Amino acid sequence: MGFVMDGLDAEDYDRSYDDRDLLRRILSYFRPKLGSMLLVAVMIVLVSATQAAMPLLASWGVDAIADGTIADVGWRITAGLLLAGALGWLFTFVRQWYSARVTGDVVLRLREDAFDAVLERDLSFYDETPSGKIVSRVTSDTDDFATVSTLTMDLISQVLMVGFVTVLLFLRSVELALLTLLMVPVVVGIALLFRRLARISTRTAQRSLSRVNANLQETMGGIAVAKNFRQERQVYDEFRPINQQSYRVTLRQGFVFSAIFPVLFLVAGLATVALVQLGGTSVLGGGLSAGDWYLFLQGVSLFWFPLTSIAAFWSQFQQGLSASERVFALIDAQPRVVQTDARVPGRLAGRIEFQNVTFGYDAASPVLRDFDLLIGAGESVALVGHTGAGKSTLSKLITRFYEFQEGRLLIDGHDIRTLSLGHYRRQIGAVPQAPFLFSGTVADNIRYPRPDAGDEEVVAAAAAVGGGDWVDALPQGLLTDVGEHGRALSMGQRQLVALARLLIQDPAIVVLDEATASVDPLTEAQIQEGLDVVLAGRTSIVIAHRLSTIEHVDRIIVLDHGQIVEEGDHAMLLARGGRYCQVYNTYFRHQSPHYRAGSGFVAVGD
Ligand SMILES: Nc1ncnc2c1ncn2[C@@H]1O[C@H](COP(=O)(O)OP(=O)(O)OP(=O)(O)O)[C@@H](O)[C@H]1O
Image 1 (tube, helix red, strand yellow):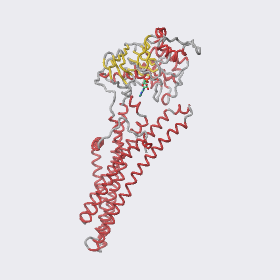
Image 2 (cartoon, protein in one colour; image 1 turned 120 degrees about the horizontal axis):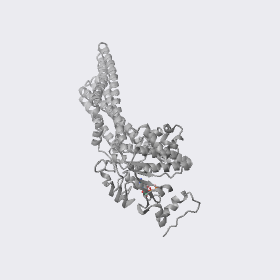
Image 3 (cartoon, helix red, strand yellow; image 1 turned 135 degrees about the vertical axis):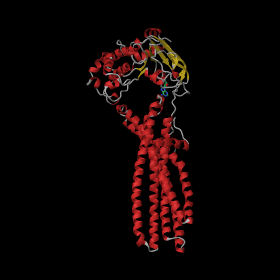
Image 4 (tube, helix red, strand yellow; image 1 turned 180 degrees about the horizontal axis):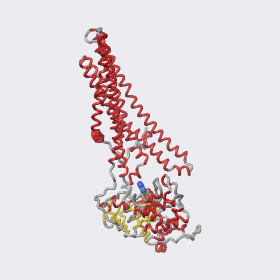
């Protein structure tokens, strides 16, 4: 059965709450709604009372028929039944309306909390958790939680009705009532037995569904690449087993839940048979009236219905409970980036110092070991090296997206862990290889870091980058809609927007992952000019992919397997014929204007 469970393990941050903690947590969401809940509770009592009144009235009717007084009391019983029915409807309506409002409000808050928690997570969380899985926690899991609260109210209502019916039964015949109650422990015992099984299979079903979601999300995200490489079939083949797994897991869940009913009905059926037999004998012997017997038979079905439906609720109840557990686990996930203080730095000068830093995405296999590096305030540094050398890792530590395991990272002499993260990050301008643009206009995107920036500032920032000519090329200038993720703009234009955005942010430190995608020479020149403007007077760490960048920076740092193997400026390093030259020959040589295929290699010494 192993294949059924493949990939359905808990996430790292998942945890099990004990029932009491879970309940306390759930109740804390309901506490602010106490007024409405009280009204719902009163309605529940009234609904249950009107439901229990029906068989009681009917049993009086049966007695009246038996003793021949029905002609006198019949209309009163009918009117009583009508009244009970009408009131039952009214109370049910008020109960359901208010419980829907309570549930809606609770889910609203829970979803807000979950989304807030998602926004608070470190970048490592997003690296490790597929976004589809996060989406399903914030959407379908909170929905399942709503189901629980609706069910809980139904459950309370039904339990109350059972209480009323029990009292009625005892008032009529203690022996028959005891006989009925005898079955309760059996039914509850069976329901409890299923409880464990139900929770496990429900949790697995939810995980398999979020696996389906995650796969869909990833497919949609990379659909252009998939289509480009004509990989639709492979994408489909990857989806099928995941979908089939969800099917099998759901089927198994259905099997677990459908097994409980026949067992419960059997127990209930046996109890009814015993009551028919014993009650009938009692009526014939004169120990019980026909009305009482009728009340018992009606009462028993009223009695069993809630008990069996409680068992039925169990599945959804479990589903909701494990959903709430999943949402709370998301809300409670501990950040890995932990600040020891929240000092508010003034304007940073931008001096960055790594002291004996050891870091691994997995602590057991460090990417950086005892790493030392000092970057002066206002210095521009290019990181170069083969893929996997650790260039992005360094930038992720400076932007404080990841927590390092050992050593210190000092910013202007302050331990990075002691700074207020919000204030620190506001002074860090990070530009990824493919800058992300949000839906809206070019101006909206430039203004993103500082929404209060005036139009003139936005225009000035755009004009400062690459002379501003690129804005004229846009169909509606700065008011051009960028489309979803900026798809309406070319790659080069997106980079220019990202540079203008940096000017509005005005950070002290810029961490820039240069785009590898080639752009036309004009845009290339505009980007280069833009970079000169944006980086002036700031500390900059550039993961360099362009020859013009490495030629211009103050210092080039050559990384290999998380170690600095060489550093210096371009001319000096080229002359040295060391590791830099190997990197140059591989990545930068062909970008030279004098490049001819097979030429331009720099000699590398031993
Ligand atoms: N999120 C991650 N989880 C686990 N390991 C990672 C993660 N990101 C990077 N690594 C590993 O860390 C090492 C350094 O990666 P890093 O991304 O820093 O290299 P890089 O020099 O920036 O490479 P590239 O030029 O390809 O981006 C590599 O071995 C890589 O596999």
